[in-house]
Image (cartoon, rainbow, N blue to C red; front, side, top):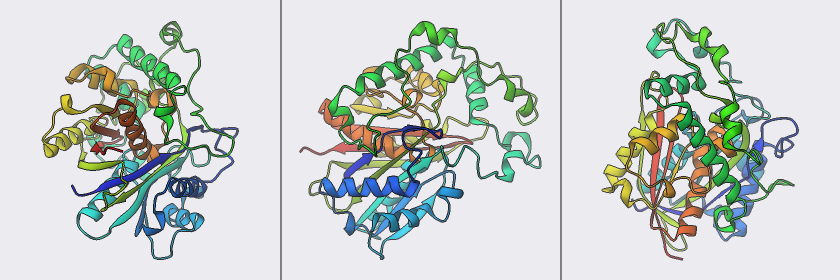
Length: 383
């Protein structure tokens, strides 16, 4: 693709509670802060012809086309077309993928794209969609909470408690270490008084992880019919689930290679069944690799979304990939998951990791509820 990432920034991730580090801010304010930071780093944000944002909870503080609201808050030119998309946890990367497609098609030359989610202000499932409880759908198509889908996937894939704990411990230790590595946080800006990812659990040990009980047993009975009567063993603890949080990420995508940090090599998105809720990211990854003519061994750094410990554990078990190249600065299990912002945050993290490792190719993989996934491969450009 002749599409380039001029720059990509992210906010810290704040805890999704009233006293969280970002809770006093606004969703559009987070995007405005990222626009200002991009400008300060030399990005020509006023040349953008579009602003595309992923956001899952599009009600309340995130309603009213949050991309349009953010455009106004950031003082972007009136001519900028603003669009908000919801593709669950893949929204942020899909927004950047859509921007890349616009540029590749010649519809635009520059676009801002990313995502935002403030779960302290708009809680999970705050839209109260009728689909969540609609029994008119046959069981294979009914909504299943992603935590329950993760428990079911762990059983079906024979991923045991030890593997889940290992994934959580790896994420926590790498995330804590990244706070002391300037190269891995170079593209994370401070917002107000928050300058670090707030959800990381300091002092997490393997013994503490092993002592935690399964966390989602109570929801199983309520969704037995939706699962066709299947019995699922509660296996995942709170440490195996990414914390709910606030955060945002934003990239300037361009047809111009001058000064760019990376070239978009391939982008793919995929659907999947509700039953295999968390596996569509694997399909998107395979498509992106095939389109790029690359294999996992060619990828120097992978940001693989930790959409519950079972997903990253499956990736590391089933794919021929060096763990030392995966989520080198930690992941969602420690840092948190601001749903619509996730893909954009991971792209920003990927660019930092590529710089830190002096790598060439990097890949982001995201996966979400109800069978949604996306992947993007980029080539780092020499400074």
